[in-house]
Length: 326
Image (cartoon, rainbow, N blue to C red; front, side, top):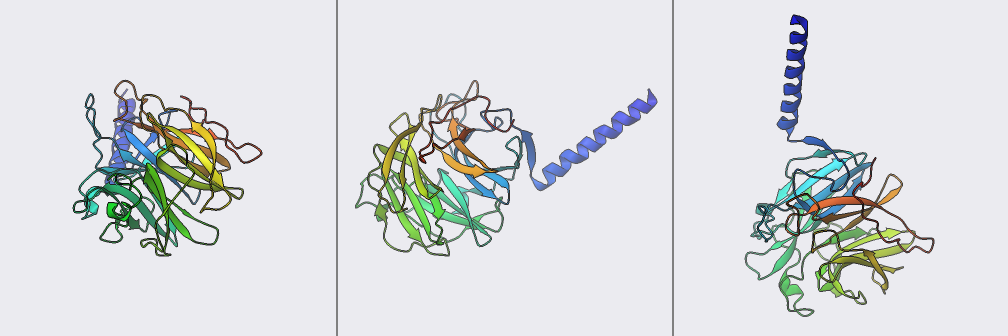
């Protein structure tokens, strides 16, 4: 009995040391049990970066208390995994206070890597210019810490008033670098836009161009490429579904291909990322599926597989409770 007591005491001390080590560097680990993937925090507006065989998930953070119907989002989160089952949550890498021009609302974002630097494009409310704006932060690591790369917003509302008069159209940035090394920023609400970026990734290179022929476009554009086709997926209607269009050219013309994902349970919004990871394609989105307090203002990220047809079109997404990775 005394020996068992010594063993248990040793194991307790070892566990305490391990937990302390996790807390010391700020990382915590957890295991996903299907959808939603993350259940200890509300997460929304997912974006994914696949880098060196690792899957980095970037999300907003719904901080709204239960039973309050409003968005409270002040920071962005990052998680990583090598198998979509065992996850690491990294210390909060970025919040709105990192941008001197921003006054809140940590809305949808995306991270992309170029030349060993990681650029995080975010949407937030501007302090001095009415409406939403898009900024960019930079880091030497995909998990941060990130800092404002410019000291000013990259896109502000007064740059797009000739296309639409609303103050919230400059949101939901998505970025892609084409095969020739040219970077493009897409974004928008009610109207989708794109602009070329300079190689430094923090300056525009040319005019802002409205994207045409995106029927029922609401918001949440995401652009990716597969076998010579560019795919521009986006939210339509409200409550939102995800639709998509295809083109051989990143500048269009775009051909509408229909609904990709139905209304995501218990959430009025729908926001997606589409990525390839270890020979499979995945559709990453959010729903309001955490029991019992989930909902449109307390959302949760989910992951399901995505499949292409022989002609390059995408099969409609099957949303599951089981998710992926097992």
